[in-house]
Amino acid sequence: MKNIKILTFHSVKNYGAVLQTFALYMFLKNKYNSVQIIDFNPDNITFKPNWRNPLTFILYLKFHLFKRKMEFTIPFNAETFRKSPPQADVYIVGSDQVWNPNITKENQDIYFLDCIPDSQYKIAYAASFGQADFNENNYIAFRKYIHGFKAISVREETGKLILNKLNQSAICVLDPVFLIDDYAKYFKLKPEKKELGLFVLNNSSTECFEIAKFIADEVGLMPKVINKNRPIKGLKNIPIPSVTGFLSEMHSSRLIITNSFHGLAFSIIFKKNFIFVCTDKTKSTRAINLLEKLCLMDRFFYSYSDVLHSKIWKKSIDYIGVDQRLGYLKEQSVAFIQNNI
Image (tube, rainbow, N blue to C red; front, side, top):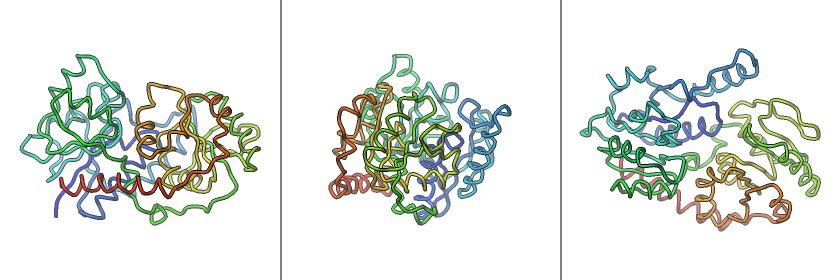
């Protein structure tokens, strides 16, 4: 029985980060049994409730309760991890932006498993650099830390190009959330309703709310906004849902508008009609990479005005072809894990 340890971003204030952690953990647990997530929580990315905002305590508690579904090592800080990392037969780093130095900062070496001897078995699953290219200083650091990996997979094609510059080979695989065959086995999900679900990250402009109301009226759906702390006039508000609640609200939507990568991912997993709006072109790579492979780029927009001009909400997605292409990508992703553990 192999002892597997996963290093990823598991304590971020983000549904996608929590769910990609759960998905990889559960996929491995069902096959290899002895699996733990390394409980490493850097200050700059760890979700800490804000005493000025009681709602953050509620969300923190909901995330904390969800983590009980997974098994963790003892807690590590940077010093204790570098000095005495947990023992394992296989170390897996990923998914999420674990190789983005703008996020990992002074802990960059840890997320490259630099302190784990090269004699140990190290692989990367769906690791992401978070952007398409870097300056020379970043490449110097990458060359210093990326050593001893038995196999590397990345989430975006741009990650392969970065690794090519480092003389490292890699394949592109799916985000871990796609590894779960049936989320209804793990979560109680509401059936589909005549609702339009809007799930956007907190820095979104108010334009998205007006667009959601307009499109909902066009197609005869009740508009709702998922995970918005303050009510928005004309939209049903679903404030700070639990992780299960978030998935359930996505599942019960007939049409989804989102600017979140994992909002996009679960729209596809639940076979929903969706509209993806990326207002920040520097963060478009991962969505474009996935949508191009699934032949769904007609659902991608850089502005809400482009959405209005397209009238894309009148066109339904043919998921027969999408499922075939997604199935092939999933086979490749599963094969990478099975061939390298």
